[in-house]
Image (tube, rainbow over all chains, first blue to last red; front, side, top):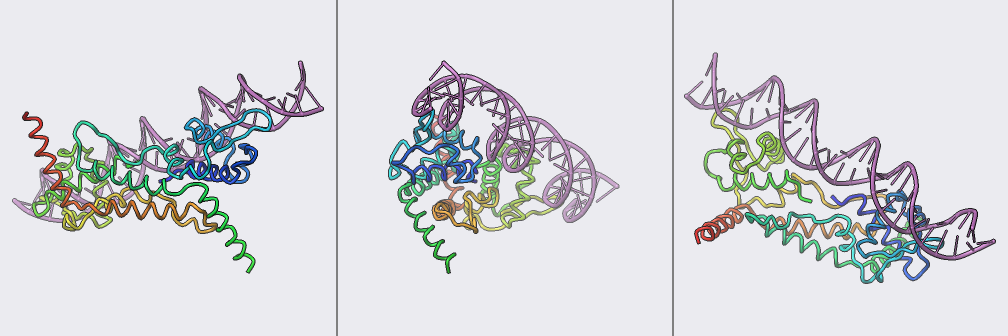
Length: 138
Length: 138
DNA sequence: ACAAACCCTACTAAATCAATAGGGATAGTG
DNA sequence: CACTATCCCTATTGATTTAGTAGGGTTTGT
């Protein structure tokens, strides 16, 4: 199952994507907006940084930014950093009949998750929010 | 990640598929052949039974059988029983932008894992074994 | 009656997940 | 320079899940 950590990571990255071009967002800003435990988020963002997905600026006026444009970052890239592999890979020794299935499942899943980039997600979130406002107003 | 329990389950079902039509296989026979801890396998087979994938016969000459022909049983059905869901589903309340992606990932994965049935797997395993014998003989 | 088999509940040890704690390093500002 | 806001790093904790074990109970063929 997708871990809580992973959903936190995705929400944080989405917030950063939405903010792209502006001043860096601090851990506390993101934590408050997304209701993520701040110290936990700190570890997550550091993890993403060490894997090249985010940049950070230290000291006053510091914070986090995406290290690539939102259009160039996919859900799959974030999930892979946080979750690691989903299927057993390379049992070397005696290859079994399931190996091929795991490989296919893995690449198919990769395909789906690499399809959607964060620029698109921001737009979709905007649309969703507009919808919700309408529904609540009725 | 696919659990050990799940790989045990798949191997056990494959053994039962290979045996289909013959006398029921006992827990100990399967455990020995597949090198699975017997008491753990017992729990797994019971689980599969409670979900309708296997049948059991109690008492002397008892054991386990597939409750459907191997051609009608897929890897996906076994995995779903043992692993449960992989993606967050139905967060009702406030639907988020990730929901759609999870749904698509889930159905794509289902598709791949439901593709391969155990009759096919038995054949593939036969082919694989023949290969190995050849390789070791050289 | 006996033995071979499955059935059921409960327990435990180890690993992982989710989160927290306690500091240290860096950078802008008065 | 002192101060404070920020990220950085390691370790620790409590809860949950995973992997497996234990101890008995029930069924069935001989």
